Length: 553
Image (cartoon, rainbow, N blue to C red; front, side):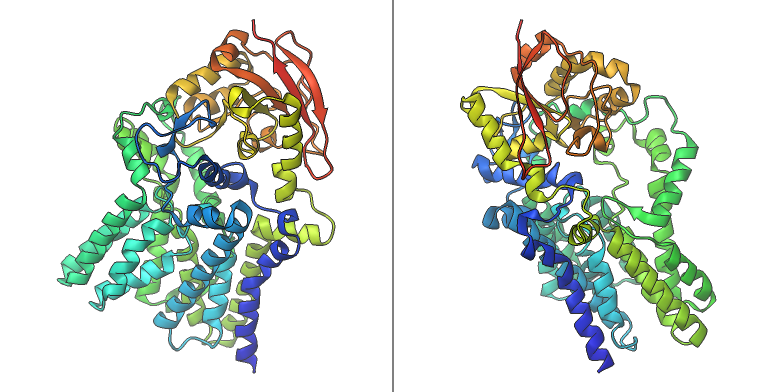
């Protein structure tokens, strides 16, 4: 009965985080960072454009950043896009999130069952549940949740037990996961496995076919990225300058080492690791060779990730391809390796009453911190007790409010261009506006230069924003020196108190960029460069949006 209860509770725990989306639907919270303010809206804009399956070099998305190549957007053959294309953006995201959580749950459960068939009953389900609760980014696909299945495939290869299913798995995986967050990590993993197989003389036909299948899958799944790379496209990344002051300082790298050791990496799923590290320390002498090797690999990746700035500066800064790809994209391995380490330590601790109690306490602590550390879990829990502080999906995207603004302007959206201040440009893009700004990983260098010309005076007043825009630039936003360039700079919703006392924009540059209107979440100071038309309020929206018309010289 006890084992049945644990397994039932694990499956219930898998479904529990998705209840808010079934109950509140679009009034539930959906992550903002790199989701509603970025990658998720990219997929919807691509769907609306009708160009999802047009990979020709002249296909353009005219509504983004004044017009960008379609191939700078994700592939239409990716799992995230397929869900959005079939179910729409909201239900596509919810369905994708659940399928990925299920993949992670089953993969981690399978890993425990195969490596520890003698494990305490229910441990595999608890490990699967904990892994599925990690706050991964569904828009990156199975970059994290799919890794246990790949690790098991590697294990079969080295044991010469690979089958046609492994070949199929490696071919399909690139269609399910982000190129940026998997190709470097899996490239290193294949190198490791290849060296091990060579030393042991364990190469097999299935292993070779799996490697070839993965390579072919990467090319086919991410064809737009390769097409853009070889098209002669002049990207804003040509101005990417991560170390403008010379040699990277050691202190920030040490701080980064401590941070990613303690919390993993926010882009792939934070997990509080100190309880796991403590349990490992307590049972270290009894750990087996494989378990210790797992931890050594984890620490090696962590050190490489933390001190990559120095490595990149001294070795890679003059190699454009390596500088653009960034070889420190290994962090998706952190959550899965920490969970492997936790299971390894638990198997040792379970043999003694004292350490068994410690293991149970560690599992409780990690479950609690992971559950509450997942912002979607936390914010929807806060909403359930009427203590929510973040906007819901509906309130953030403000569809009704944006329709009223379009109606008030009274012109077809393709005939004018807008920019946003105090709110993410993706909101305007989602609602059908044509923007001169946006968040993109690849866009024309000339558009970055055009935006720089518009707000150069503001950048000069804020060195942090100037460096942020000049040396990175993926967020090609209209920055205000007073609002800054942090999270709050584009989240000036209800309850926020950001103010702009002086805003210096270049009128000639705005005219050259075709900028006609400003959508601002904060009231702008009076200026001869723009005219306040109206302020828009809506009960379903998180925003008060002030509409300004540019007065071209």
